[in-house]
Amino acid sequence: MRAELLGFKIDTFNFENAVDYAKTISGQVVTINPEMMSNPDMIEIVNSAELVIPDGIGVELGLLVFGRNVRRIPGIQFAHRMIEECAKDGKTVALVGAKPEIIEKACENLKKEFEELNIVYSQDGYFNDDDRVLSELKENNPRLVLCALGSPKQELFIIKAKKLMPETLFIGVGGSFDVWSGVVERAPEIYQKLGLEWLYRTIKEPQRFKRIFPALPLFMLKVLRDRFVPKGV
Ligand code: UDP
Image (cartoon, rainbow, N blue to C red; front, side, top):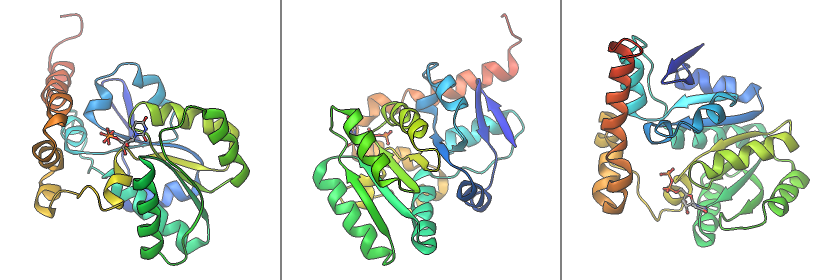
């Protein structure tokens, strides 16, 4: 089932059902957040995805304004679980994105965590030749590709890639490799539980403030306007 928020279609699965569903499909998973939703160009991209999961408290609150009680699914946790499922099922995985030393460390840590994990391809996110990376990916034909290029770069890359690899599931994972590498910490659990991970990251990395901070309140204002102000006013 899907809900709609500011023109974006969002799936309303809980975490376990989203995992079960993702295991049966191929194509694109978008982990949507208010920052992404501030860009109207993203509507078409998001609405063409095979699965859209609400990543973050902003999207959860926005849906609540429209009477939809949907729990957020942190994208990083979802992607981590999908890796675990691939390891268990003997399915292959590829990682594309982040700085070279980061992706190397992230792969190393994941392999330590999941002994059975089969990473068939990894590529840092600072390449100029999309065609080279796409053809290398296609050659390896992994079941799962995690793509950490930031938004909308990762979504645009995935749109190209999914046309070439009809049996692969792609997830855009933003800054997840930085966390898995151990270089950037996830917020303490209390922030995660309260949905305030964005606040913690903003305090730790003040340069994010300019980007993230206006996005949330502006997003909530847009949602409230869309819900309560008659169209055309
Ligand atoms: N990144 C990349 N190539 C680029 C730009 C960014 O691989 O051309 C990586 C960057 O190193 C980081 C990730 O994309 O690991 C996501 O960055 P950010 O934290 O800005 O994304 P967010 O999670 O906020 O969408």
